[in-house]
Amino acid sequence: MVTFTKEMSILEALESHPEARAVFESHGMSCCLCIGAMSESVEAGAIMHQVDPETVVAELNRLSVEQV
Image 1: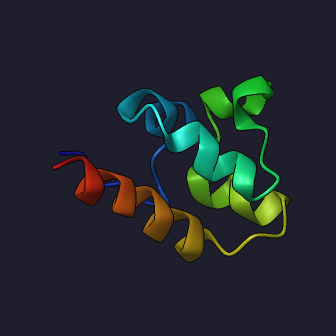
Image 2: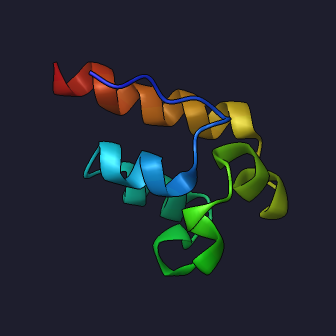
Image 3: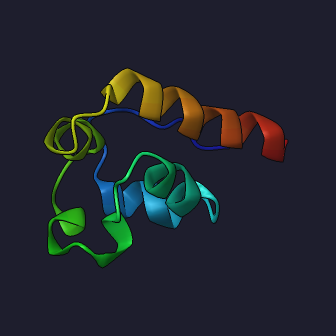
């Protein structure tokens, strides 16, 4: 089970769970299409899209709990 953090890269988050993409997209973050996803943190991406990083991380971490 992975624990998502706001410091991890978007790419790492996307690779960690198959449903992470849906979480990002639900917040208007088309991260799988963005070149910045390789190096940008979850926090930086969220802020860029005017989304609360803590909300995104919480939703990502719910994926890990649901998977268990």
